[in-house]
Image (cartoon, rainbow, N blue to C red; front, side):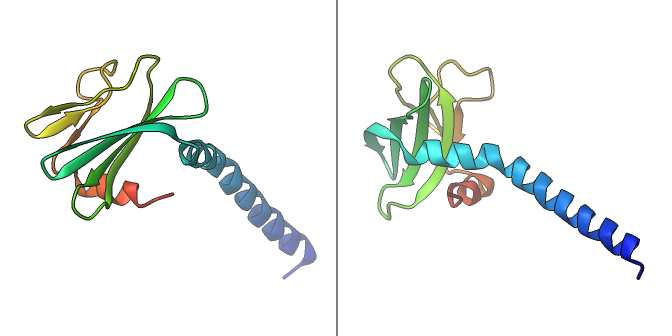
Length: 122
């Protein structure tokens, strides 16, 4: 392999790594923000526990849904809410964001497979 080809290959790999690192920055920022949650409030209804916490930046709030028996986190959402966060338990869902557009601002009960997988991420 010629040195020019090898150099191009290394530059391509370096560029790909740089793009991947830059693309992950927003997620890392969000994970760091969620780790600083404070002033948490919990309420248990049936087999679920809902928790709302203030985030250190802006008017951010994190909502977390747990299995009341095992304590396993089942779903997590972040959103902006300048008001005091509250929960509304309705039959097959829990509403956490009252400023959200239609079809958003709630978690179905039981949470979806996708919600459970996302809750496992840092």
